Length: 175
Image 1: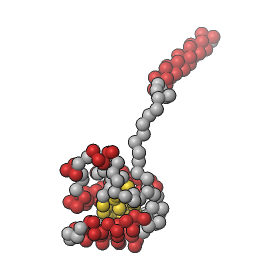
Image 2: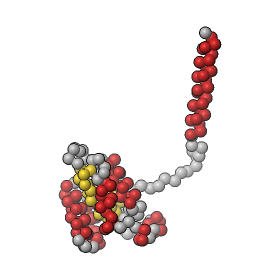
Image 3: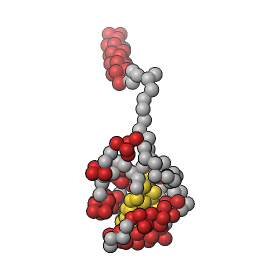
Image 4: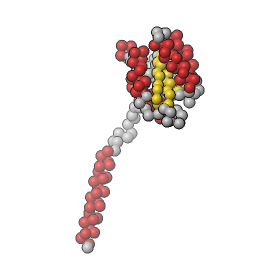
């Protein structure tokens, strides 16, 4: 009987050692070294000037995502989010304005999780976007759809910049 208990004890000790070695091998050895963290878009920030940061200055307009021609692709990807039925994206400079309509089955409001998923889709398409404002407020969404239609009909985005900025600065957009 003692031999069997000794075998169990030996097995338990060996198992603890194996797990301990495996866990210590996965530990970060550079804990004291500073790690750089990529900045993320701040949802409550609206740039006041047209100053560019280093990342934007390095990229060229030739590499820039063409929102006029390809916004529908990103809108379709945003609509793949389970709560969203439709989305419209309007971009001016480094700011994207996204209006979303929720599925009828979704009874909630705009959450930070949904906002971040939408912002991630937009920034994945165009890394030069630094601010993504997302709204589901009916009036704002209607305005975004109207602005989008006007740009599709050929109206210059610069002429609509003040309308866009007004929605971006709206408290309901950046809740």
